[in-house]
Length: 263
Length: 333
Image (cartoon, rainbow over the protein chains, first blue to last red):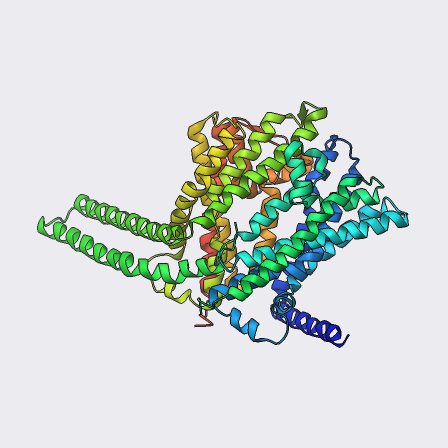
C-alpha cells in the first residue's frame, strides 16, 4: 500500500515539474493550449461538413457519428498527457545518451519513464476531447447503467491499446535512433479509428477491428452508449490487452539492452 | 512531417558551417575575382563611356548571380547528403500518405453511395483532389520556421548574421536539398502506390501551369514558414504560434478537404487570404478548373494571382526580417 502511495506521490511531483516547465514560457503555453483545444475540435470538422452539405455516413446520424469521434477524441486526449511524451523522451534521451540518468533513479524504469514524461502541453487536447464528448453524449442521455459500464470497459481497452502502441514506439526508438516521424505512423494507423468502421470493407475492416483494433478507440465504446452491442467487441478487446502486455514487455526488454552508446 | 530536432539542429549548425566553409569562402573568392576581372577589363580598354560601364555592371551582376547559384547548389547538395543518411525517415511518408489517402477513399465512397455529386464535385474528382494534395505536400513541405526559431532562441543565428549570404537564401537552399530527397524517397514511391495500387490517373489538364503553380506553392509555403520563424525575434519560443498558423493553414489551405465544402461566405473570405495558394490552388490547377465562393476564373488567371500573392509574401517577409533583426541580441551564445 505504501509503495502505491509513494508512486502516486512521485507521479504528483512529476506533474508539478511538468507544469512549472510549461509555465516558464507562458505566452507560448497559452498558444499551445489554444491550438491543442482548437485542433482537437477540428477532428470532427470533415464529418460536420459532410452532414452540413446534406450527405451522411450510411447508417449513422450526425450525432451518432459525432459521438464516435468524440469518444476517439476523449481517448486520445486522455492518453496524450499521460503517455505520449514517453516516445519523445525516449527518443531524445537515447540519441543524447542520457537515458542512463533515468535508469539511475530509484524505482521501476518503466514507471519512471512514463511518470517523468507527463505532457502538460496536451491538457488542451484533453479538455477539447472532454468537451466534445460531453456535448455528444448529452444527446443520448440518459445512458443506461449497462451501456455506461460497457462503455467504460471498452474505453479502458482503447486506453490499453494506446498505451501498448506508445510503449512499442518507445521501444523502437532504442533501435531506430532519433526518428521523430515514428509518431506519424501511429497517427496514420489511428486515423482509421476516427470514423465508424462500417465505412471500411473486407480485409481492412477486419484489420481495424481485430488485428490493430483501432475501432476500440472510438467506434466500439460509442456503439455501447448507443446500445448496439455485438460479439465483435469482446473479440476486439483481446488484442487490446495483448498490445499492452507486448508493449510493456518490449519496452522493458529494450531498456535492458540499452548500452548508452550516444553519450 | 515534423522535423527531427536533432537533425534540424545539425542541419543548421553543422551543415551550414561545412557549407559556408566551402561555399561562402568560395563565393567571396569568386566574387573578388570576378569583380577584379571586370574592373581590369574596364581599365584595360580605357572605357569611359557609359556603355562600357553599363556592360561592366551587367557582367558583375551576372557573375554575382552565378556565384549565388553555385552557393545555393552547394548548400542544397550538402543538405541532401546530410538527410540522405536518414532515408528511412523519409520512407515513413510512403506509409503515412497512402494510409491517409486510403482513409479518405473509404470515407468518400461511403458518403457518395447515396449521391453522385457534392457541391458539384464527383467522387472521382474528390479522390483525385486528395491524391494531388497529398503528392504536392511531399514537394512543398518544409520546416524553415522550426529551424529559424531554434537558431534565434539558442543564439546560433549569430553565425548567419556574419555570413555573406542572406539567411533566407541559405534556408531556401536547404529546402531545395531536403525536398530533392523528398522527391526521391517520398513523392516518387507514393506516386507509384497511387498509380498502381489506387489506380489514380496522373494527367494534369494543363501540365505547364500545374508545374508553375506547384513551384509558386513551394515558395509560398517556405515564405510563410520562414516568416513564422522570424517571430522568434520577438517571442523567443514560437512553438505555440507555429501551431496556430499550421492549424489555420491546414483548414484554410484545402489540405484537409476541398474548400468548396465550406459555407459560401467563408469561401469568399478565403479567396482573399493566402492559404489557398499552398494546396487548394495547385489541386484546382491540376483539374483544370478553378472556383471558390462566387469567384471563378481561368487557370492562367489564378496562377497569375498566385504569383502576385507569392511575391507580396516575399516582400512582407523581408520587411519582417529586417525589423526583427534589430531585436536580435544573440542571447544564449
